[in-house]
Image (cartoon, each protein chain N blue to C red):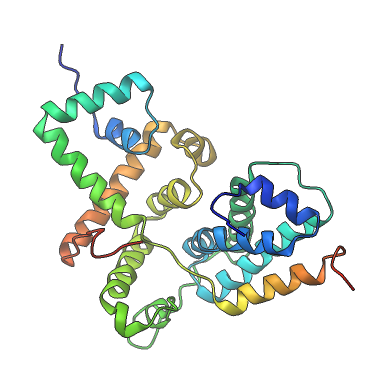
Length: 199
Length: 78
């Protein structure tokens, strides 16, 4: 299946008709965004794995029962499910489940998130790991706006409404998030170059 | 008349949330205003880094989801 040419709504239609491969394309298209969004809220890899599973299973159940009525808007729909499940989990636990190792480091730093050969991509992975940690360290409201704009692809107007602030406040939070990230990158001598770190 | 743009305007510009008119005005300002242009480059560079921040679920999670999907497929050949 040449998945670059097939829209989400086409894939959804095919899946509803019983084409399994189309769901695999959707899953591969959104697994990272869903997982990252959840991870940035719950801050625990294992819980994020479970909630990612729950997100897609909920989507499968809705699609299979033909209750899906957001044709053409699969992405915001699946991201909303992910966000809601993560927020529900967070509210139930009422704490940040950050796991700290004996040496004080976050357990996240000890986990291998990439399936690429470590030796080959060590430099890239080290940098990416640091960048992820910088995002995690941002104040809650700044991390939230980054998550909503980058991973959920919400507009600043939508973010303002969802977080009950003015659009200028949402933009201000984004500005400070970017300033803080830039400072951290500078402190750690990370100058991001797309030629060195391709997608 | 010289229009001054704020950091907020630049952020909206980068995220394509300006009107066509604002977009053109900021593009023009970036050509003439070195300070604005420098700020734009800094923001772009940080956002460029940010786009690389992502996490991947494990293969076993993906397998579990795909298996669940297959198990619920009533159209599949028996």
